[in-house]
Image (cartoon, rainbow, N blue to C red; front, side, top):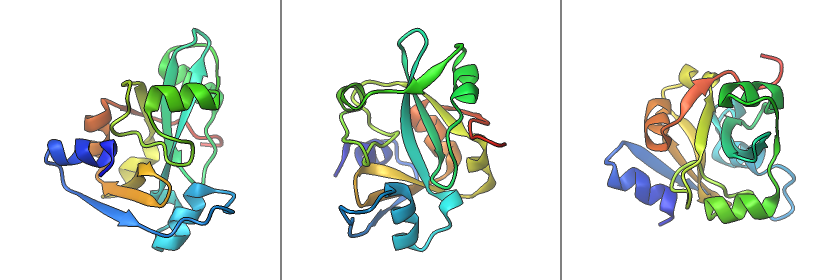
Length: 157
């Protein structure tokens, strides 16, 4: 069990865990997950951590088929600018390694913004806390467990 799965279990929400064999040479963990699970890439969400202008870390949860807009996530976070956080800061604050960062069960609770497109689906898939492991849950449960908010944070939306 990962901290992400434990959070879902402890809160008694409806969820399913999906495991697949991760290929170390894969260039995109999220697209690999969608392909190996046979799920449309728009329903599989990646967890990206950004650093804001005031050095606060913020989590953006976006479809693996999309790109996070730094301008839109900064606006949603109430700051002027954002940039992808450095690996050490991400791993230290979340407790997860890159490619397996879950929005659930992070060591330090970070402000979380979920792309609004998640609401288009009854369930979405996010990392369960390690490469090759995904958790499927409703977008509303994801928001509840992360204390997240929905906003349009993808480029070109």
